[in-house]
Image 1 (cartoon, rainbow, N blue to C red):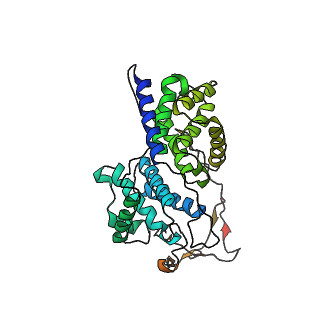
Image 2 (image 1 turned 120 degrees about the vertical axis):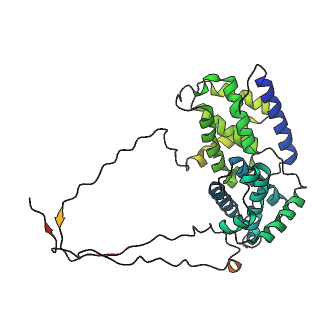
Image 3 (image 1 turned 90 degrees about the horizontal axis):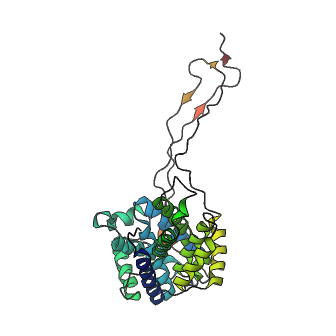
Length: 328
């Protein structure tokens, strides 16, 4: 997000105000129910697992991060309005994902429904996804345009850069686009954490931005207080959200440094002379995948299979002592 001209701060304030107003109309806290009977309701773990699955699908189909963010918002809004059974969770999630893709992506980037149903291993037919789409749209009053956490992340990041131009001075090799891409990765990781559902998307985005700004500039607190006032948020909730986000991000692997150089150091081996036929290769053995009937395990959410099995080669070695070291 880039704004030019003297009115950039005013434009950002208007965007933030509109997003806050939209979020207040649409947001409803989703509290996952932990039931002793697994068929009674969707558990927090199942909710997080299905979002991790959607994140993999986004990468598989090369879709925008905004698509995943909207899909998660639609999923949580639907689960907050309907008490769904776990066996329908895959169908609900893939339907929200498809609705988000049709809302965000360009026409040529929208996955073909038949291919999406097949390659996602969701266990649903295209007709079932169509029917679930209709149910979701009815429950959400056909209103899919909501302010997502990623929308707020872009706004807060633009506000930080406009009010603190020196924000990225300590990161000379990182431009604003790369920096917001890193924060986007943090946000998408946090979307699969049910403990953060108690906070609005705007609060989650500001917590992520504040944790990053704290590492970059000494007067980070004044900047965050300014954004708190603009967004009309509670500081105590932000502190609590920051603690949970920091704990959750500690499980995220750090990204590779830009322009990293890797040095290959080969292992040292002794050259030996072996007679012909010492190593014999057998035909590769391809393990047969154990396909399970989805109808018998619908209540248990499983990650999609990779679909391809690695080839294994067997080597038969002669007993020790059959190879003689080479002599000069």
